[in-house]
Figure 1 (cartoon, rainbow, N blue to C red):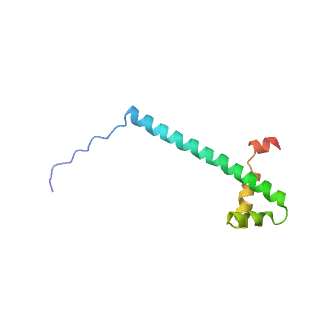
Figure 2: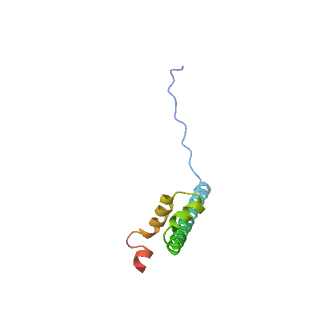
Figure 3: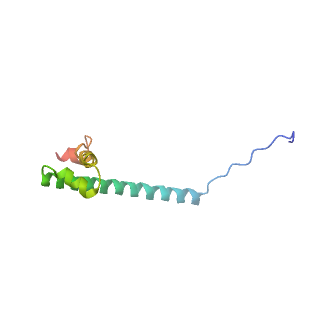
Length: 93
């Protein structure tokens, strides 16, 4: 080991092009996540409509078809019904 103090390496700086590339990537991810959430809500609404149409046993029928538990289907449907105040669903009610 040397007794000479070590100098810190200069910190790297992002260029404007790097920053722009990262911002564009983050924006694309944010947009994709918003689209996934819109589609999840549409899927949950469809599941709820089908379960209502089928009546008693509808949730079980959906669970068998989707190969998931009835609790999962119930939770999926409830996620749309329990929209927070101030959302589109609440305003339309």
